[in-house]
Length: 201
Image (cartoon, rainbow, N blue to C red; front, side, top):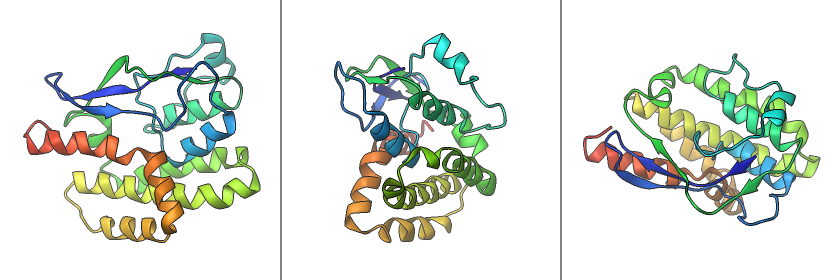
C-alpha cells in the first residue's frame, strides 16, 4: 500500500488544510509495528490517499460490510500486517468535507459510533506486543472518546466533551503528546472549524 497526505477542501473545492500521516516519508517501507501502533490510535489515512495492490486487497478479503464507519480503518490494519506500506510526502488527492458526509450524518448515534471504533481495537490489539499494548491502548481509548465527543458536538450535544478532555488529561504528558501526534486531530478538526466559521459546513 502507498500513502500520501491529502488536501482537505470544502464543497467548492477551496483548500482548508493539509491532512498528513504521522509516518516517516521516503523510499523505505514504514516499519509495520510503528504503523500498527499509530493506526490503532486513530485512522489518520484520508480515504482518497491509499493505493492498494489488488492481490493484497483480495488476500485480506477486502472491506468488512458490517463496519459502516470503520471498514477502511480495519482494512488498513489488515494490510499493514501482511506487506510493505510506503508513505510519500507529496499530497496527491483531496478530501472533501461537507454537511452530508458519512462522518456528519452517520456519527449522530454516539453509542454505535463509539462501538465502531472499539471493534478496531478488539480485532487488532493482538498485533501489538504486550509492552506496546500498555502504552497504546489507553491512548486509543482516549482518542475514541474525543472522536465520539466531536461527533456529538456536530449533533449539538456538548456534554461528552468533558469526558473527552478528562480522558486526554489522564494520559499524562507523554501520552498526550503521543495522542496529538498520532491522531492528527489538529489536521482533521481545524479545516472543519474553518468551514464552519465561513458557513460552508
